[in-house]
Image (tube, rainbow, N blue to C red):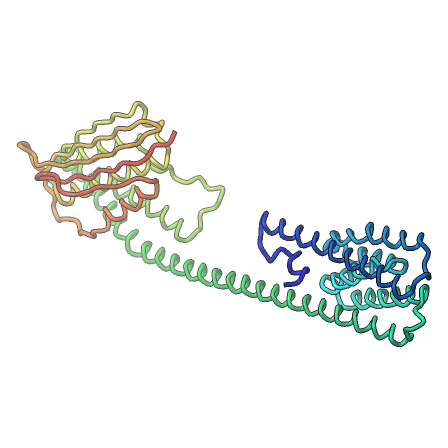
Amino acid sequence: MTAANLSAGFGVPGRWGRALRITGDVLVVLVCWSLGAALIGVGLDETPGQRADGWIALDALLGLVCTPLLFLRRRRPVLVAGVLVLASVLSLAVAVASVVAVFSVAVRRRWPTAATVTAASAAAGLTQSALWPDPDLAWWLLVLSQVGVLLPVLAWGMYVRSRRELAASWREQAVRARAEQELRAEQARTVERSRIAREMHDVLAHRISLVSMHAGALELRLEGSGDPEVVNSAATIRRSAHAALEDLRDILGVLRQSVEPAAVPRPQPTLADLPELVAEVCSLGFTVDLDVRVPDLALVPEALGRTAFRVVQEALTNVRKHASGHRVRVLVEGRRGRSLLVSVVDQPLGSGPVPVVVGAAPVSGFGLVGLAERVALVGGRLRSGPLGAGFEVCARMPWPR
């Protein structure tokens, strides 16, 4: 593991990665300064008396001042390398730091810039050797030493740069492939939603329109001369069919994603609409007792109230389908900051007329399953099952402050 890799922070994100990079930079600076000081000592041993004490002090001072510039080599690699290369002409203590700066330029800049900085570093080394020559060292050995040190550093830096670019291209390709896959999946979902919307429009809308039309015709024909209960039932069927068409239109708009942002959606039912729902069921001849123990239904959050309304609606629908001769008790109680309880219990009637249901509705078996999922989305739990001779549907949902 090299000091450059250590200073890169091992690829660890966040606070730990930054701490590792700072630690690596400190180690790089200390190592470069220590090696530079060692070079000063070697120079004094090999060429004693060539440099005065003032030059030696200046050499050490330049090394002490310029070597910490390596902290900035990631942000300004060319500038840092230029300053260190110029300082290395007069200072042996900066020589190692200038090589590290050349490596940083090779990693972070294109090859023409890296080659130029490398050539300048070689020229600085030869200039320093010319200012304080070693009589025992031939000039061609000086050139060979500069080339032997700087060319591998340049090649290594360019190799690291190419590996980083390759890894970045792989990441980019992976991101692009993931985006294309998500786009294809979204297109497939859009096509499937459009197909479902067409099927629902062609089948359900047509049949519900026929029900609404025939119920309206029956209501009009019997009005004033027929049985009031039959007329009332026909009007209820017509209103229910009309409401079903409105709901179907909203669902088709969601499936087709054709609702404009500026369009005003039709208001969704909330818990405040519960008395109207109970009154509609009672108009069909069912017995429903509504017990609301909430101070103000308007205080219930919209999502929570809508879920509670759907619980009661589905339970009353099941009573109409499976237990037409039962009496229903609907209980709604709760307080803000605690929970909201919705309980629908049906029991057989002791006496009185039993509503007549002609043609039982088809059983799907998914009503309570979907209801449990809807309750779970608001953080609640749904319990349903037989209770004596009847059936109970009970939902408890949190009511946040």
